[in-house]
Length: 75
Image (cartoon, rainbow, N blue to C red; front, side, top):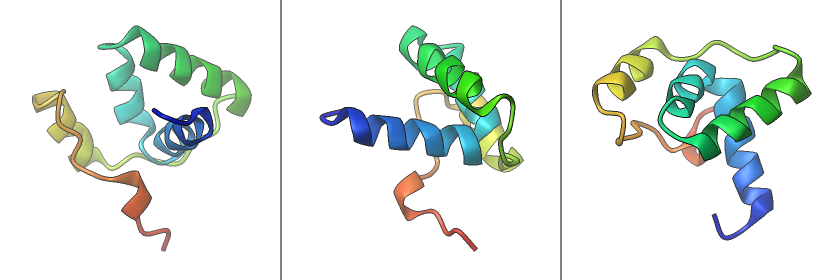
């Protein structure tokens, strides 16, 4: 979080590609909840589907994120 631009980019990617996980993370952090709600307002409910397997991993291990959004394939 050294750059607000990078933070927004990461938050936006989480919202679009891992919406359910980002929403679940928002329940554990007020800062993440503010980011989620801000982007949700911008996108007016539009997002892509999340990876259900990652969601289950996150719910079982809320402090561990099973991916790095910067290495995600866009195919």
